[in-house]
Image 1 (cartoon, helix red, strand yellow):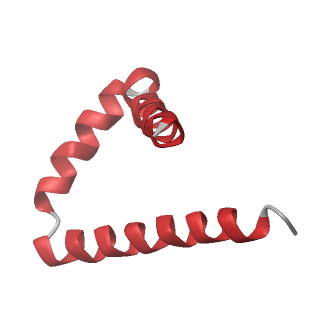
Image 2 (spheres, one colour):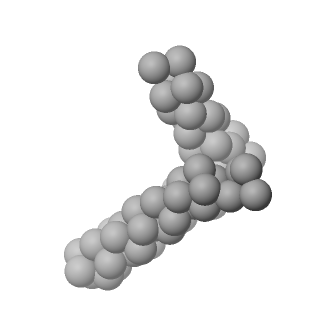
Length: 65
């Protein structure tokens, strides 16, 4: 559970970086996302989830190599 909470905390830190560094660009991007079709956002979400799983897999299986 400690590891999970550490990873969750790191996700929050990484997610906050654009809001701290480029707040005006985040607002522009948020307005742009409204115009993107739902299907495109779903595909991007699926690809991001798969990429995340791949990173986890590689991290768990290559750390001893």
